[in-house]
Image 1 (cartoon, rainbow, N blue to C red):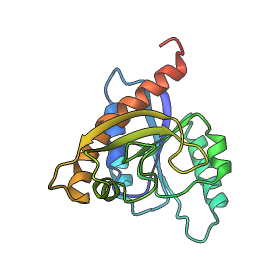
Image 2: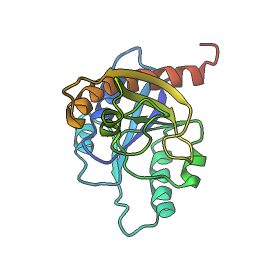
Image 3: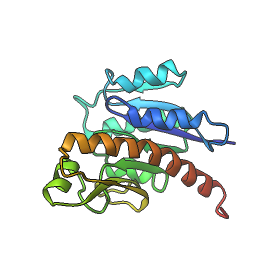
Length: 194
C-alpha cells in the first residue's frame, strides 16, 4: 500500500511535478492524493489537475495564520494524506499545524542546510565565495528551515554564476533529490528495517 502524500505549493509547482511524475513509477512507495495552495492562481494546480490529482486552494488573505492553517489541515486530512510535502509553499506555518504533522512533513530548501536558511540563498552563497551551493530536504519543525536534514545534493558554483544561473542548476538537483528522499522516507517509515 502506497503512502498518501499531500503537496502544498504557492506557485509554478515544478517540485510538486517532480514528485508527481516520480509517483507514477511502479516502484514508487507514495502517491499524491492532494495538491493544495494558498494561491488559487498557482500554475502548479493546473499541472496537478491535468494529471488527475485533486486540488484545493484557499487564499490566506484576510485569515490569520492559525485559521488558514486549520483550513489547509482539514483539506489534507479529508484527502486521506498521511504525509505532507512542502514544495515552494511560501507560508510560514503555525506551530499548531507543524505539531499536527510532526515527523510526517518534509520541505525542500535551496541551500546546504544549516547554511543559508530563509531567502536569497543563491546570492548569499555567491557573496560568501562558496565553491558549492546545493539543496536540502528536511523534516519541518517549528523553527524555519531547521529540522533534521534527510538528504542533500551539492551543486558547483561557477565563477560566472549569478543568483539566477545558479538557481537554475540547483532546481535540476532538487527535481532529483526530493522524489528520492520522500520515497526513501515513507518506505523507511512504513518498514523501519529498511
